[in-house]
Amino acid sequence: MLTLIGVPIVVLGFLLRFNPLLVVTVAAVATGLAGGMNPVAVVSAFGKAFNDSRYVSVVLLALPVIGLLERGGLQERARALIGRARGATAGRLLLLYFGLRQITAAVGLAAVGGHVQMIRPLIAPMSEAAAETRLGALSGPVRRLVRAHAAAADNIALFYGEDIFVAVASVLLIKGVLQQNGIEVQPLQISLWAIPTALAAFVVHGARLLRLDGRLQREANRP
Amino acid sequence: MIRLEAIYLLLGAVLAAMAVLGALDHSNPRRFAAATFWGLLAVSFLFGSRLTDLASGVLVLAMVAIAGFGGLGRGAAHTTSPAERAQSAARLGDRLFLPALVIPAVTLLGALVLKSATIAGQPLIESRQATLVSLGLGAVAAVALAGALLRPPPLAPLQEGRRLLDQIGWAAVLPQMLAALGAVFALAGVGQAVSSLIGHVIPLDNRLAVVCAYTLGMAAFTMIMGNAFAAFPVMTAGIGLPLIVHRFGGDPAIMAAIGMLSGFCGTLMTPMAANFNIVPAALLELPDRYAVIKAQIPTALILLTVNTALMALLVFHAR
Image (tube, rainbow over all chains, first blue to last red; front, side, top):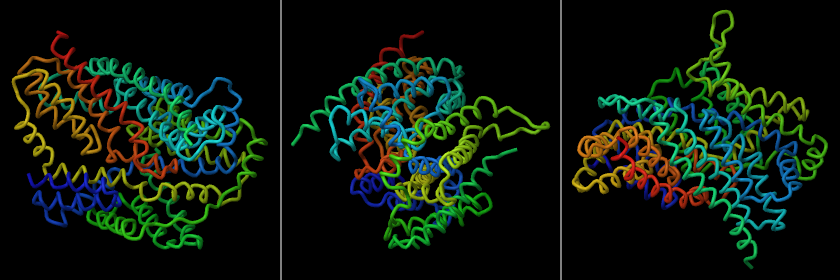
């Protein structure tokens, strides 16, 4: 049971808002030592896994071009484009992006989209501009709410779209785990049963996005 | 053949150049701390495949010490003024979107076409890593196109990239740190400890209780591990297969599919899934690092309820 010591360390550390890098390191060292590993083995295991997961950081390579385009006025242009579109609201725009992201992920194109490539340069400024055409200049809290929802729409659409694609990592993991336990299932069976939840995600989050416009209005009217 | 290793070397070189520019940035009071932090990350990308595990571990500990005690600081941005941007946007118009669309276009091309392309019998890119390699190639093509379009000063791509990297700050390495924590958890046997704990707590003779234990357990354990992939094997071997499938005759495909999606509800609610929840908050300059999670929690909780209901309705009746 002592090996679970890392869990309360992480929970408390995040709740009390210590630097997450410190929290994670302390939790890893405590867990490793409690699990009977020696300090050198813990640091080695930590280093190896850090190295093996470098692939998550490849997206940082997109930062120079995004920064360069921002320098050239990309966000301003994205805002201007939306400012001209009648009937555009932050909620409707995010709903459109949500639907497209879910569909592209469902056909295996999960790499189209993402926070660095789409949300920061295009979707967040467009949503802000759509809110501005209706509400005028946005206060800090309203602007931040729009941005947080832009990031959230990308995540939720991705998670509840990609599992419909048969060759995605999670479907293959499911097949592998069941196989190890002597149960054969086809990837297609697994992806089919992801569809009900995907539809529910569209309905639930879509409704929330359409209500977001009303919420922004109320936040903006707040003295 | 272009391997993922080549993309790592490229990212390492970019980070190293940014670290040098950071060290020269007198507007950042902690410029040497920041430069050392990014320099160490550059070393990890340039030489990581040749470092021993212990050396990598020590390198990570040094980065944590710098970020955790004193922080990285931030300099003034080397970029254009709002007026210059408006002028440039008016001049270039919709052409500005082209380089931004190059990254998804090349990534798409890579995943669909380049993956199996060959030149003189040699595969063009490492096909197992097609998406990541094409993402890297797309970023290079996009910088080239943006450079031709904007004609910025030569160092601008690095300075502008550094501006965004500084905004993300230490959160940029949090996803890798959490993956490392997950590995230590696995080695120390955290999964077994959790599943034996759950085995003691839930009543075994009620279908609905067992379904709830599985879906809620997937979400909760995913929140702890930051990754549904780490939770799935543990929960499925601990609750799903012995109880839902073997004891009550549930359908394994339905159970596993909806179980994984219940785990994703947990992913939406945890700071441990840093690349989805914490990095975007930093990238969008949100002062509350949990702002994205807060926007996601209502949807996640409703979908967790939906998943539990779907599984309770479907898993025992499909056959």
